[in-house]
Image 1: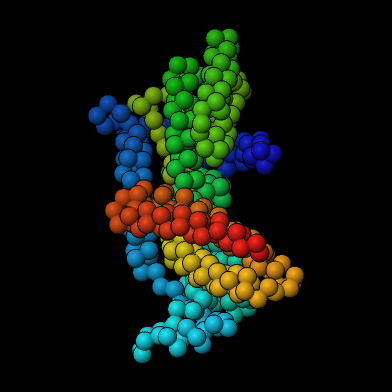
Image 2 (image 1 turned 30 degrees about the vertical axis):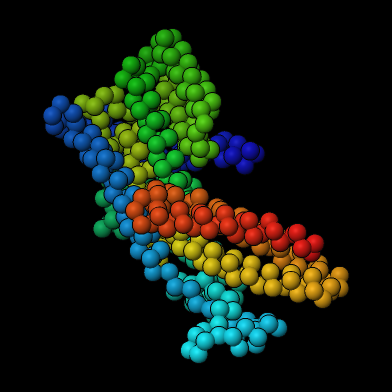
Length: 396
């Protein structure tokens, strides 16, 4: 809770730094420019509407297709690891058959294989790959400030510095978690922008005219929407984004000396307005965060769950053989303590599998073959949980 409160208090300052400079953009006109009308609304309104209506479902479709592809092509190799009973079991195998006593090795991406030359810690290599993916996006956003060929990103009103902030708050270790964070950040920003448009539609000048009604309305609006959003069971990430944006919009509304310009209706809605530029920056940031998890290789939680299921099943089989040998031979205290520590490690892997399957819902929404595969792994995880619960009964 303390870290969440810190992020909430620090984000308004981040937003002030990352927001597009609307005062600079419109200093010569003192108003938002007219982008032209189409069917009673501004052209920028239709551009923003189509971006959200088409872009969001398209992102979900691309994520589903990418996860379905990598989940159907998962390949896990094996690492031979012999036990005392290997010779007896291999003697009973049919000619031409392969022993099932090899430890599964999860697949690695090309970047992780290159990093493995300098260190064999898989977790460290995985985190380094995540850092490289995020750094590439940050580098591209920085290039839009210095390369004329990319300057159109800035001229359209949104700020690439806020896109980097959005990627930092959204990009995570797998596709499912990133989709969940992107969706919660997106819809909370939409709600904040809709409330902001309502505020400036009712009072286009905010409190600049010295109206007490506008000031009391701004305060009441901030308190009411904050209470509703905190009281409702929204995701923590959604609360953080909504409250931070609402705090920024309310500060602009209540400050008589503020010169930030907002769209006051659909007729003059423009991408250069502070609220719409925030929404478009959120869409771009969420898209870039999703691309970080899909390119160059897909970090699908369902693929990680497949690898975890195979590894846990193998380790449980090996653990049962050792537990039975323990009951038969009555080993010393040292080996008993080793078995207990391995049981705790196996429990941690089962908890990790549960998290991967939960994130997997955001990758497939339980639709199609990928959803059926997730359902089968959920049933298998319950069986693995049952076997894990039986292991301590051996009085290890």
